[in-house]
Image 1 (cartoon, helix red, strand yellow):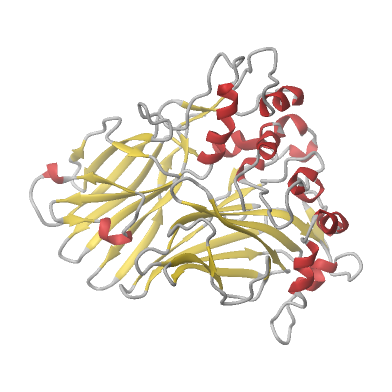
Image 2 (cartoon, helix red, strand yellow):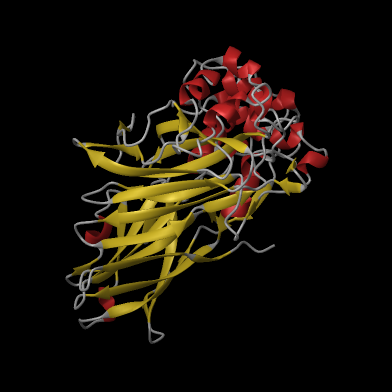
Length: 473
């Protein structure tokens, strides 16, 4: 539950170098069907009466160990991370909420976790934040329910009578330290290939959703997690459990895996999430109290920033890598170009770079016109406002917006570099002799998100994902 270590980032950078066989033949993709090996939940809030439910479903007859990590909206600090062990066809549910003045999560079912909390125990975030996003990453798959070959799977299996797992304490003990993990070989199956149960092959088996709920306002909206198919694992053997770097840390401090550690590295994930523009609707209707806010999340921003800093600091890195942000003097801020239209074709806010800066990992965009202001919808602490007042007049205002990302490229973090070069980069003061050559990746920025439109009279809300313009092939 600490910040990502340099060793993990080096692993992410070198993934394309270490792989290369048939096991890496399938590239990562965002699966529109919603099934994958990694899931991203763009926004979970516990602000001012809001709570957010998170669901993870194992759709296979195997047992899955998956990392669940909550990251702060401002800078992607690890608010809390845990491992959930999903028995065959199991679902784990939790809710992000506030209790006693603290933000945290409360598991709402009995599935085994590490650490194990049990149902309905509130767990405060270690780094306090009322707004977070989450990532769920498949760590390993145990195929079978043999007491000798699959003891963790047997312990995590729910009773047909009580609905309770057999022994969550035994599951927790299996993850207690590097020694117990070394002995726990049932999760050593490669994640870079399919696995077979009976006559059926399985690979992308996780799916999930989230629900924003405000009981006092009578409003709620639900969305599906972004599913990354064929995420895999970075090591040549294809298993996080066989990668000793995953466990070279204090017991209980499980930093890995992260979104930087897909089997083809961070750049591959950035590329499949890259957008050159986000497109969605907006509405400001004071008559019904109908107001829209957008959520824009950069789920890999932290990894990119952490990765390029030591490279750019190297004296042999002549050509410095591009910052994630593009705002003058603010390398963390993405300057978007909003083009806002009403429903009658009129462009009410012309696109001009720099008018809207998104400086956080999760950003809420509110809309304002005279007294109508959507900041009251989510009451976010990571919000910016787009003013549509220059349309003139009052009353109902509505339309759509294209929010263009920077036209510069985010740069790749690997391009066939030898492992010795990467190791030297990551362990100063040693440095490689030649300048590091880095390949360019997709234009735009890796982003996900949605429009959340709430209505006061009658109380209602709707959530729908952004459409987007992908980078040119």
